[in-house]
Image 1 (tube, rainbow, N blue to C red):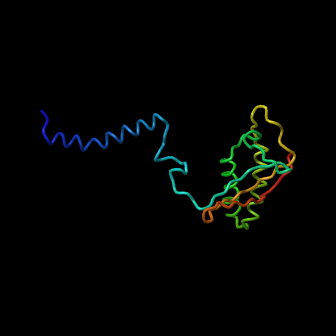
Image 2 (cartoon, rainbow, N blue to C red):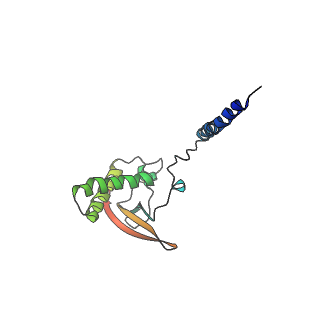
Image 3 (cartoon, helix red, strand yellow):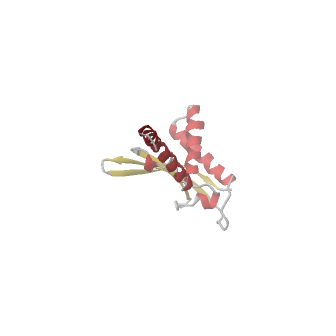
Length: 152
């Protein structure tokens, strides 16, 4: 027969046991909440930006298909080159962005790992940045050409 003290100890352990069971279930389902990097679990910033690649006629090209680099690593590569390497060296932001864009385009062409059946890269490549911010109840976006190269 269990005493009231044993029952109380068991109830104190219940939250820990439920937490452990939840963690095991989340790991089994490959769900990382609350450690998820996805913004749906975090606060939204009032502004954001992304980069994309076009050909010489401003038709969007798939960097993943042509060069083996998807959108998020493309942004991170640009950000690293522009902010860390260029701006830290004391260059103005616009000049740093332009140099970083050209360097990034040369890099993805030189280090490309195209997907099977991908066409050759276009003769000209351009890197664009789209900055989006919330203004009242609207999202306002601006597009800026950062740099362009002629492919070898």
